[in-house]
Image (cartoon, rainbow, N blue to C red; front, side):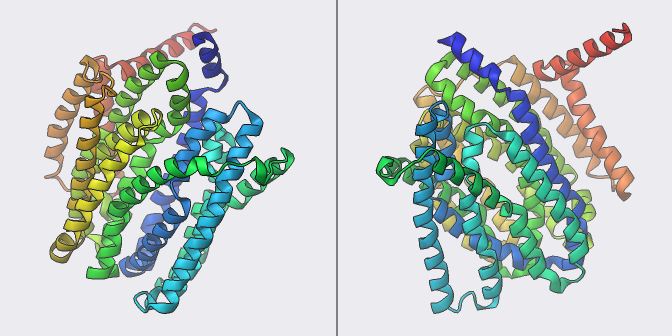
Length: 496
């Protein structure tokens, strides 16, 4: 059995999938890095905040219509991918559920717009950006991730982002172009999903999947559990933006989203390790427990290797990052970024426990319980925090809520002996070097950084020192990269 599983592992390279995922995240990050300074200066905090406020509202309707299927779909597709008919029956069943929830979601949205005047100032933007509800459900990203078809997703993803990158500069010229920005944001996130739907519909039709073949009821309980967790997570991801806009105005939403968006993009870069491993871990948990636990330990070290230095980086360089990416008009975002900087570590820990330990073992109820408690705390505290401290209050509550979810999951994992042994000598090396880097970089906070060149130089020095010191103390991941590069150089020098 283990030999067969190893053969399967070799047939679909995790390294290739990781590189493709990395390419997607880097392309998204590049769009943000190179367009954010331009968009923030042209549109201003108020226009940016207005679009992000509407985006936060629509996100709830997207979540409602998705009904937990994105995470559930990845796991179930990965388990059914070797049985073609079973696989496309599953896809058809999930699509049918999404059709019903999409109709309900639009009915609720337009009902609110017709009968309530709360969102009257945002009505046109809400209608426009509601296209995300339909497009997100049509895309079925969960199918392509579950089958580990990363190449198709990457080609489509990068193409769309390069197109939108050019359109930002061509079409957005004044603060009044916030509607254009909203349209491009919809296309950026979900525009290419129509192609996904066309491909999957043809596969369902080709395999002659009929309604009589379907058993929709079997999915309702697990997706309801995952749905509750997803909604709870997004309460403290999106509720803060909604309340900032409601209590403090669009400008403060702009200040918050500039800091939050940069940190969240870095988190998405780090968690691609989990995105690549989730379908594989779901399979291995059923067929090879030993290999499953080896992947868990390795993925934890890799996640922390990036999460810890980036938390330190955003805390230390917040002033320089905000000035470069947004300008002096967003100076109030500096403290917000420093308050949000621990999220790189905390969110990655939550992702690791929730999606790499609990989901593959079908113990999503523990994850759900943790994030529901965190969401309730966020709801209870956020109104007071934002009323008194605006976006900075929201930042503190966001970190506290994530920490609470991590603590609950950790205690449950320890109680049920689900947590692998991660506190080894290698992880202690990462902690030790992180402490050294924090002390050294903290001293940099008292030095003003002028200009792009100096900022890039100090940023490069920060990461070179961190990974360089880890290599010196022979942290196994960094040292293995060093040994690999050294062997390649010797191979080349030998003239082979």
